[in-house]
Each structure stands twice: as structure tokens, then as C-alpha cells.
Image 1: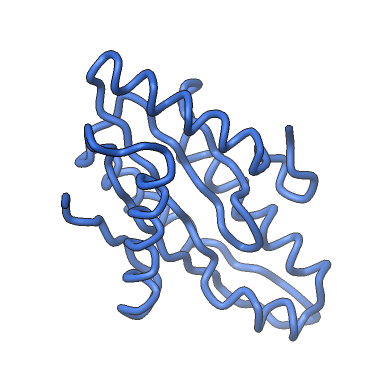
Image 2: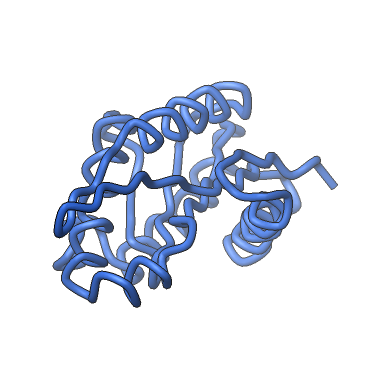
Length: 164
């Protein structure tokens, strides 16, 4: 299914794709990476400019993600609230990092205009690569931990979770 404001896949589609990716990657011993992307300071934007602006910010972010992650076998989804998720199949951690850095820069270049005010956007990104011991849940939890570290370290950055 699709999430209306962002036109990205929704949480349900993401969960199914994640599960399938774990199965395929384990079966064929292919690398896979999961990125969780969180829009920094989304609440103040919503509170200051209203939900319509919030929606157009999310939709703008979705456009940027769709431009960075172009491959057909990857999935970009709205994971919840101001969080987006990207599942990269057959992708090594190094390549996932390169893409994440590209995303950081692309988001920094965005300007939003509202009532004569212009403001920029930044994102925090957490990345975890799939390990042989992972299932969908543990993989997601590890990406989430990386995202949490990125936000704690001051936002507008990529954190790769060290392999456990």
C-alpha cells in the first residue's frame, strides 16, 4: 500500500518487504542494508507552520529520497510519523553509507518557503547491515539504535551501527 502525503510505500508494505529481504539475503548470502531516516525537528515545524506545512515537508523529503534511491529492487517507505525507511537489497555497508551521505547533502540543499520565511531541513540517518543472526525485528532494532545515536550526537548525520 501507499502512504498518501508522501506517495511512498506504507508501513505494511515495508514490513512485508523487510521480511522477504531477510529471507532472500539469508538464502543467497547477499548483503542488505536498512536505513532509518528521521526528519530533524519536525515537531517545531508542525507547531510553527501547521500540519499542511508538515505534510509538504514530508512530501519534499520523499521526493529527495526517491531521487537518491533509484534502483527498482530497493524500497523507500514511510515508517511512521516523520520517519522514513529504506531497504537496500544486495548492497554492502560501504555503498549504503555513500548513498546515505548523498541523501544528507541533498536534504541540506532543500529550502522550504512559508509566509516570507525560508528554512532548511536536515535528517538523521541510522544504518545497519543484515547479519546472519538477524531476523526482521532485530535488524530493525539495530537500525533504530543507530538512528537514536545519530540524533543524540547532534542530528544531521549518519551513524552506522558497529556489527555486534
